[in-house]
Length: 411
Image 1 (cartoon, helix red, strand yellow):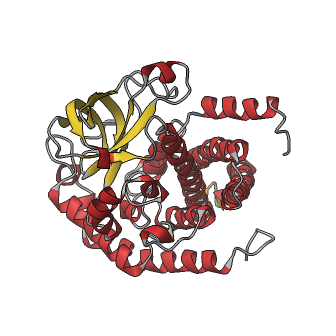
Image 2 (cartoon, one colour):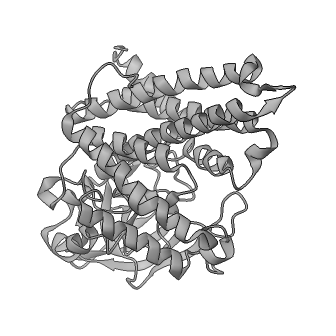
């Protein structure tokens, strides 16, 4: 029974049900069959912190199988050969996968093309030559990319880039550093954002361009893998670019106007992380409710105690609100609205209440909530990160207030 008063469009409902079925057939069994790999970090990662060959093979398998099934590219524009489903399907699909699979069956991260890792509307901005070179392997799940925007001195203030593209004949030379670049250790391509007109950039009137750079190009280096929460490996990296030659075919969008692509990418990231927070929150809430009904204390199930269940009721209420906010923001985007305020609200609220729901589920489980086998700490780590990723909650509040002060006060 649905708690939502209106029906999702038929194509979105069909995509969601198909994704759930796909995950049950292709994702859950892979984790069960390779439990020895996923439960041993020393086998998951190489000494330099990158994914092991065994893990990379599994990730590639998931991308390829999903591409053949039509799910990997379901939200990629039809002009690129994708399914053409919009932002609502993107939100609904990701939320369903995160809720079903939880944080332990994390190969599901590669079922739908992530906006920064694979094909998306961003590739509509590449040149015809770039499309001819990269589109087929990207759509087939054979190749992946990353998004080189953040820098050591330019995080929330992304316009304060230091990476430069100096004119060189009919092309450019890129030099600079990037950080927090997800998927960079394994990516085949990187969209790199750089200053091409320092004067315009200083006035925040453009001057930033985007370039498609093969990661094996001379001068492009994954300097180090960034390890988080004490893990021995990871998928975030710091990049160094030294005199990387780029040709005209590698520019993404218009010269000096690449920041529009960055903003659109970040918007897609906010939809994704809103869905991730709600999905993980619902997964953890269901886990806590099941545990509360079976765990005995003082001769009664702990579900009989309001001190246990009332916090879960609060999380259910918050997650319901976050879910509706996410559906609304995605629908507004599909209708062509900018939805800056609504998307900022949805992301900021979702990641906070999702994180709180996981924390409450851990509290419900007591000491068991900290164990590897339950897996709540994986979701806790992930949602702590997305309270910062693609716009911190403070930056999102700033965006909301700016819109309100400009007269956008419809709530």
